[in-house]
Image (cartoon, rainbow, N blue to C red; front, side, top):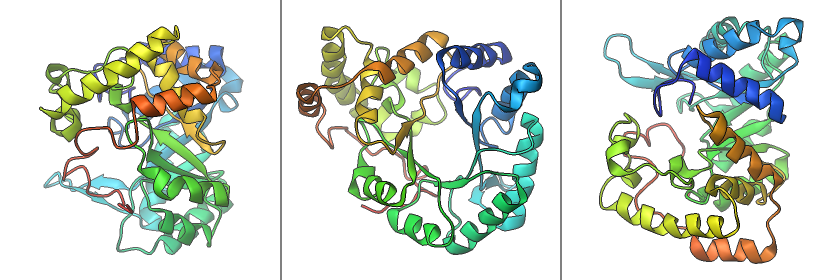
Length: 314
């Protein structure tokens, strides 16, 4: 998502620099979607891969998504999980990235009118066709995961998870561990709250997504910045970038947890990757819990409009 203008301007050159640095640091998983920049993210990934010669198909494990759509006349956002639509969108994604298949294909949001068992069956057929190696779902409930998994193994569920947002601990974390499904944690640094340079109110108002997000509106944002200042100080006391410590905390929550931070900056990428090198002690884990106890954040993680699509389950 960061390869588009979602969190600020990004160019083809910036994207290529980040992907090149990923290879240098051993980061091999790319997560994108057909709606990130309406294809721009996939195009930039494809442009980079096209410059890598014959090895381009072996450098990264690629995940993309489909299922979110907009009415061309009204611009209203909706969801389409029909088999024909998902395959058509997948084909467009493959073309944009210049690859024959992807390692992981998500349904970005559920269309509630279609039973998830039917959707899992449709995705299983894409595995049989060789267009995808596995599939997953984004923002679903544990009960939906179990229903889909009964039809075909679900490789991954993508959910927001960080020290800021911990609702997955109310069932999804456990279901993934039980079923052998990877919990792919997006926004692992709390949309900048868990970094050394969090967004203030003025900067958040320049983002179409964050300017309406409850955690970034007053008085919530002032409260959230004050609380996370303590976490920033704690990371500094240990000689660590705050984002590194946030990633390390996530990795300590279970082998099934895979954080997918996004960035436009090689410098920030290095901080994120450093989190993989940190092994939290029991004392550090306890101290972090005391600084940021579950439920500390002021404001909901989504606005009413942003909650259309994700499945609430607790």
